[in-house]
Length: 289
Image (cartoon, rainbow, N blue to C red):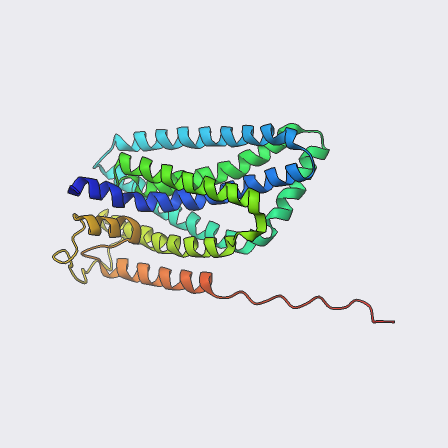
């Protein structure tokens, strides 16, 4: 296989994981809504949910394309470096927050959505269901745009499209399985694995942000280069490019880059993967007669 084809093939992985993770979360919310409406005999409101989903997808897609094309006009300039740096920081922060949020709220998500759906239907406002679906998918769409922009400049447009298509296709299959099988799917384990991968990706984003800020002379300290592994694994090669895009690999990392990467990854994984303490059983409120 030619080098260019291998690079496209392997560089789809970061985008695929992002779209898979965000697509599953958005699809999970929609699947819960549809399953609930079906259970209470309100299939007629499916169209309202799909209206909100369609509007959110259109808005996220158009916004992402406009942002990408606008920044592409400044390719190689200081303005692009600044934009990339800000995007890295925002994406890393949002990725960390939403991963921990989903871990803590996954169990109560179904009940919360059903309560909001009840309120929308009982209030007679069919638009409420569309707005609920729009908010859910729109939030995931916005996160996906930010995360994708954070790596779009280190991959090709073809890689981005292929990774997005595969990730969305897999997430839709999982959503269909959720709709048909419900609780029999171990979503907790899925989000744990994908969340851990995204923590590694987040560490790479922060390391890249530090590198850019040092190149922009915003951070004048910690600039000592620790080593150079370009002869073993070059960032210009296929594996090196994949490692740089997905894992934050740098062949000539600075001291501060390395510290930020190691500290963030260690803390994030320790807190994310640690077992949550089991809840104590509810106390009896009245003694037995």
